[in-house]
Length: 618
Image 1: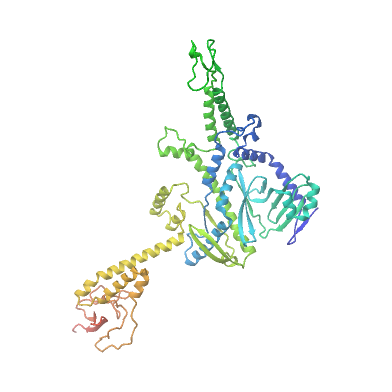
Image 2: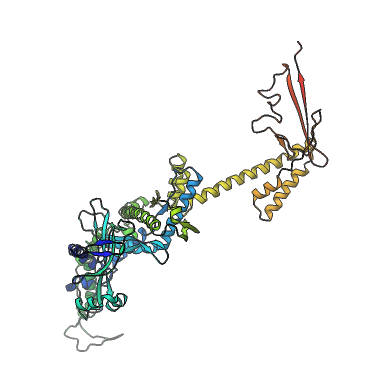
């Protein structure tokens, strides 16, 4: 058995791998031929698919709108927007859990940004629709020391899945320029000269990937191994995203309508030819016309002028009916609704009717989103694992965009990932709804307590950072509470004046806050500064219970608005408030504490306290 040893001591049987490639390629011959036809029609090369239908000349490729290409691009552009990637969960209860999950969410979105997934998705969605499947793979970017997710064209690519639909290995074939190949791999020059004709300028190079190997080889002849590397994870890092079907081989969305598109192009050519012949038809003249004058204001003398004219070339009406029928077949076969191009039946005047026509289009998008979401879940989980396996202790800087907010962070895979590779990929509960309906639906569900506020934020059809928005909302609510406190404090000043107190201190505080806000300072900083408690000074209390001014006691309102109870609701010094429930009953005797708060002429707080003890006469 011919065995090869790659770096790391992993052995692989190269002939078996090469033979597997040929078996998969032969099995997919029909599929690849259909993919080439789709590519030719979309590129406008109609005569390459049906050579006998088109004449030579400038109109050999057709003169009608290429609806296959229009539909493919439109559906791909709708499917292309990326879902939301989150590592946070509403089940997390502690701030530490949320911070750790939020950091991993930023790392995931950094992977997405580094891989330029949004740009790749336009082409990947197009491949998925046109050819029936697309291959995505996680690779190690050794230049930037980051995992990278890359989509590959299904043209010349094959894969093997197990019975659970999990990708086991993939082959990706590409054509290289002969000179570039020899310059990159000089050791392969003799093999190329021996096994490839000298006039062949393009050479097939195949890449193979499975759970153990990553190999680049030439399949011709006995095969030549250009490069080989060990898979550091021990699991296949590729995923085949395939359109659902009833056969083993995937089918593209436009496989059945290529002939209709070609027929439309041929009918258009025939119609143009008929119009040209009608204009250039010979002129019929009666017997009495001896001269034919041609040009503006030309005069023809004849006793039968009604017989003068070009020979008519009638086009059967059935031709135009057939063209309309082909338009309908093309729309039905490609599942591309008329409203996408502005073609709406005049009898349908309601939004509900248009929505019914678009229902087939929406189901295509939702199906594609479900398949891509499942693939992204696996790919990003493998990106976490690859980052942790190759660069566990490397401190890396990462830039990304999370819900429209740019960020930059520094992380270590071993410290910040720590084996947690779960990623939540969602296209949104309200995907497919316009923003107005999505908002109404979300508010209704939120109002009935069906969903949480955090969940609603994450499902909105526009970019929003749920964690940051929650923090901002809390700050706004607390600032409103501070405003209400200041307003209540200002409203208490007239009562202080009526009680003979000096309101100067309170007015000064409010004026200080207003002046600071005018200078751009935050409300919370100004309140802290204005209501900062004075330093406590050691004082002595007289036997009568008199306390010196400037001494702050528990329960004392140092702002000058009077006494307030402590946290337990009891007055300063302990015991219930006199005259309130829980106090000593009237006339039953007991201890009564009299408190009097006020301000001195200097504006300092003053408190007088005395205790009266009474006992019922015995």
